[in-house]
Amino acid sequence: MIFQFSGKNAVISDENPEEATFNPKNFTVSQAVNSRDYNVALSRWEDGNFMVWNRLIPQQNDEDLVIAFAEESLNRSVYSSAVSAINRSFSNGSYKSSVFLGQLDQAYRSMTTEDQETLNRLSSLIRGNSTDFLLESGAFDFLNSRGQTGLSDDALKLVSSLSTEAVTLDLVPGILEGYLYWSSLDLNGVNPFAHLIDQSIAKISECLYISQDKNRVFEVSDNSINTILNIRLAEELSEWAGSRQDDTWGGVARSIILSVLGLENFTGTIRGEYLLSPEGDITENQASASLSTGLIYTMLHLGTYEPKALALGAGPNPAWIWTAGQDVKASMNGTILDISMTFPVGETHYLILRGIRPFSKIQLYNMDYRSDPQFERYDSSGWTYRAADQTLLVKMKHKTQEEHIKIYF
Image (cartoon, rainbow, N blue to C red; front, side, top):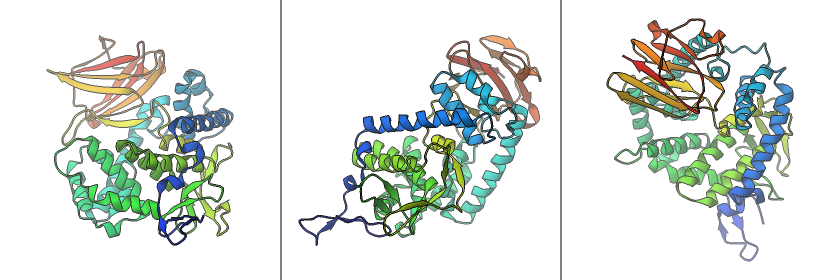
């Protein structure tokens, strides 16, 4: 039996050494054959890292770690004590962790700056006819949630005109992500990513590697194992396989994920790149970045309450929300915008709502609530509004699992 990568992958049978065929089943580790064993292995990784994060969180100033730690503590119903353990010097200048830690006035300014930088970057790539915008996770979700429908349409035209010969391994995660995103919208017409799927799967096949002991599977390019690429690709491949009820490719995706997770030794960090020798030895590239395992956790969407941006409407310039709540719904009843979300009872989370035009009043718990610029100081819900930016900042303490924010225009 031979194992290849960086070229046409094949498994050559002992019986017919001249006959080479590719079979994804041959690139599945034992723990990834079925979802049950995979979930057990994944839980073991989460358990080990949560113990490490508990030790690191009082000292480290890493936002990926903070977000993963907060999410996992919600999964384990130890949220309040976990948040209180976070390093007091942690500078919550970014909006990403603000859903857990507040400081919303700083956070929404950070959001405004980062959103504009992301928009400028994507716009430059799309207007320049570069498919590199697909390298950015969630590109279409970002554009459409922010009302950038024109730029999104231009990006789709670029995708539609992309030839199969132009598909490279680093574009594959974005292609699979885009295909799944547009499939979820249930629109009429051909999915603009559809013509690239077969070539994307072929590209995955070409770069697959399995170790001699059949315990590790990676996507390898030029003897390099890119940690982020492997995780993002495997996550999208898993979603794509699930949409087709194709557990064979699902097993490959699960194998890649477990193989990457196995590269770290419960120190809370993992290298951005590993090197594969001709003999099959895997070593760290010491020159590559040291990544928090919290980043891997969030990339795999392992938390139930993950920070996310959600559009509250459709079309250009919709209102949208940054939240860690689940089951977020928005409905317009006459002149009342009713936004509901779920979060564990007794816990508090913070929300940033953008594109909220001036209103007459807000209700929380079906009661009128007045604005208070000091609302974050109190152990209760509250809000304030930045009219110049049409930004509503809310602290929501959940008395019940589902709570509502009612905005009267």
